Length: 267
Image (spheres, rainbow, N blue to C red):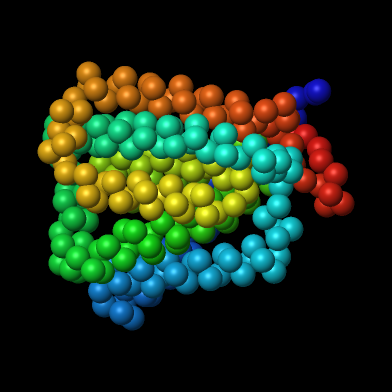
């Protein structure tokens, strides 16, 4: 197979930058309007999350070809075995992310993370739980795995789509602590979506991650807030993610895309 021309590669890079930027810009604009209209940031974010679920759900149901990409999903009969591997990786993703985030917060602090916590406390327990366990998992998965990732995959391969989606997902959280905490999760969720082409497993994993992050005391994870724990855990997750990637990619061509007439090609 010949290498793609330089113009095609440049277009791919631009696509990976433009698609997430455009979608997130619209999302942030709607979020700003929601906050101005409602007044309470946590409630406004929850409402915005549900709106995203409705809009993306409509597109996925009414215009599925807009987000379809090759290769086709693998047989669902293999999903249960894949699921046990994913659960193991999810535990590693949580431990790796939390250890790295706690290490960063302990050594360098994070004004953005502290401000985010203060906003959640000011909103009250009920509104915060609604956002953390329902609106955020559903809305963010609809936005990132349900919209941005498929749009990227129509042009570029699994690895580029996964990394671009993960980085933008983490940058949206707005601070280094949450970036570190959620980066392993974002990588895992993209691979799960690629394998299943369904949002509900991603939403459930996201909910489980947020549930653990909310109710597992920081003191219980305090012993992991050091490089001696964080680095091995991150390496262990990287190995697990690499294994998942190999299973997801399988024998397919990573750059395969769906043609206009349903045929597959390569870039």
